[in-house]
Length: 91
View 1: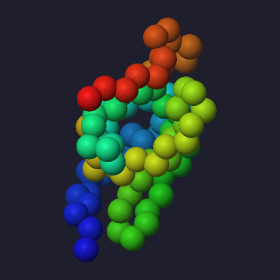
View 2 (view 1 turned 180 degrees about the vertical axis):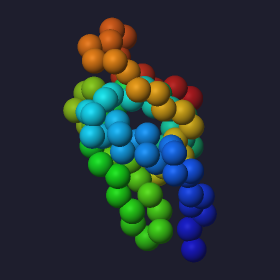
View 3 (view 1 turned 60 degrees about the vertical axis):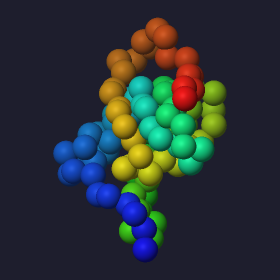
């Protein structure tokens, strides 16, 4: 059985809107490597598998991410063309 914890509906809706509006997100999440990551991503889709929900996104470097929603620690939308949207990774 999964340890997935559902996120609230308003947060899920914010991810949906970011996808529809093609808004980039500055997102911080806990990765499978147990490190916190901070990166600007373009959200592409949401998916559910085996009772867990995921955000599918593309990094500014073109890599594809699949992040479990309950591992996202913070996400904020960025206006188009905002400077300083380079990828970053942190411990």
